[in-house]
Image (cartoon, rainbow, N blue to C red; front, side):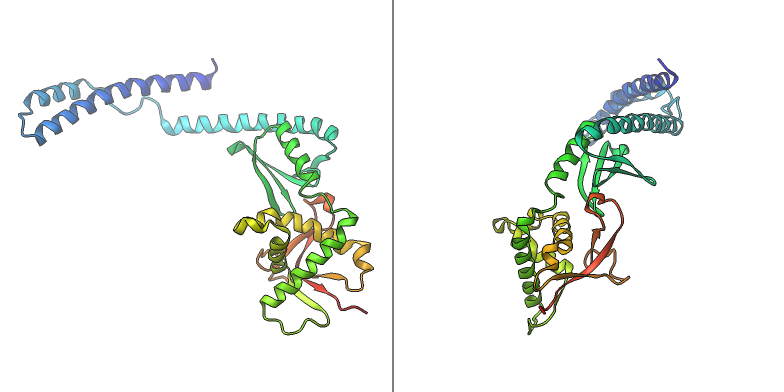
Length: 287
């Protein structure tokens, strides 16, 4: 038994002994109060209470709770450090066979296109993409983290196929027109400019399950919209369209405000990396 375990064992024995005395004392106090409330003569129970009070040891703990708390905190930090080092080693081994890159970008951990955050204080890992938390409360286990990252990489953030772009473009154009109609637009000629967060809300209706009511947005997550939008706008298909889509960079006061702008990574394979906040999308007039 090490020093930490010895101190915990001593504290447990002291608490157990005091708990026994306190339980007995509480029972006698309750009986005295009950007898007094019922008009009974409480002398017998008062004498018993007096005897117990005289024989009950001082209830101050023989150990210092604050000192023990410091010792436990130190032990947690030490064990978390060991766990983190072991977990990182396991992730390095497991990532490559799963087809995911694993490494550091400054102080940040990267796993495939995701930013990986280890929150060992609450026994969890978190995956982020394009500054969006897309998976939380993952058990801090290499197999569980790799499995979740693989699933999201092949579904949520997988770029749309080329043959899906025409349908995506049609839905996006509809979302732009509907968002403008909701703002009482009177003309749909020339360039059509719509706020990007508003367009996403319309896309969540168009691409989500209409039977789910308020949950529709979850059927078309923002991360999915980011991937679809980035792929479409950057594609040859868009460049060659009679009316192409163009993104408008957010002004400083709108950047980082989720109600005014949306972050899109420069490279979808590096969703943890650099990118730009965009505030609007423009459907350019045809030539």
